[in-house]
Image (cartoon, rainbow, N blue to C red; front, side, top):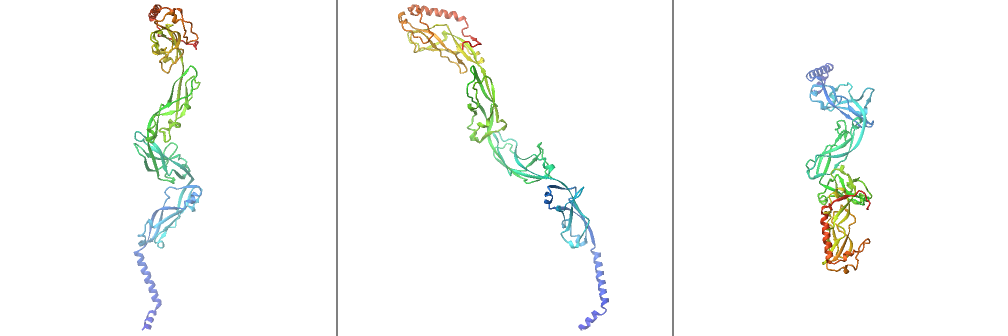
Length: 477
């Protein structure tokens, strides 16, 4: 039976094979008519690889125009083409295959299918990525923290830090060369405590305008800025000086400009500071005969942990005003001299009706000084009877310099006879003369003398004994 089957199959074998081939052809024709091949266009972005090849040339590249996308045709069966999209393809431009021409720089683009690659036909038309080449520049900058706004009243900006504090910028030389500084701004408006914030650094040109970073690459995108908020206060500046001005001159004032500065620091330290003192060792008036100025760095006198709120105030000007002293002679009536220490039973008589006292000082001070303001006092507690010369004690302010205050006077006993007073001569001054014989007169004579003195005093009331005489020369010096 098996033999019969084999015989039947092999009978007319040629015709049978021809019939099979025809059947397959007909089947394929029918299938093709139901799932025909079709074309489809895709547009996808070009992936750039091997950028280091351009950097190795010390060049910066930029894709020209819209060539960063590529459009291509794909042929395949309808059933397959209906399943795929643009994400099933990849377009790669390998920069190591750069072709430099006279008028353009191109990189071949290779398009491949990620799925059904054996069932698809991608158009073979040449695809190229056009790029622009520029000189590459890389520069490193220090990031500077910048405070925006002012802290709360009574507080000041303290130390500022930024981390990381450096950034490396790469890109076209024409763009990188515009960058003058890199700053990290932070808002401190009305702040009274320390703050920390993350900020984006700003690239600024020499005019302070922001540089476009589109074509630049930065090693740092975000930095952390920390700001210390400290206390502040205003304190006066006190100026001390050493030395003496030229004879006949006096220091009127030594002042700082500005007269006060604002300092900042820890509140505990600031509370202990009432002023900033410039020591006398730094300002000398020795031998000076006119006003002068001296520049001083105030930072030298600040305690540790304290600084100026405004660094521009670091250098101040010390102005020393020096003026020449003038001489006045003030006539003090003898009757205005108070006497201390006169023993009971004794009397004193001044040998001159007025005493001339030399006073040196500034014109403005001398003009308001009168004889009554001197309040002269003579101490005779250790002086015996006789004719003497003593020194008056005056009550004057320190801005005046007093010259000779000697006064001639006679002390005598109210009950003594003339012989007692003629005995010992208690002369205190080398220029003093011997006592007059009139001093040895009896009590009636003394009384008469006192009466005459009183009469003379009354006669002098019409004179301006308290006037101030201007003496321009210095003959008596």
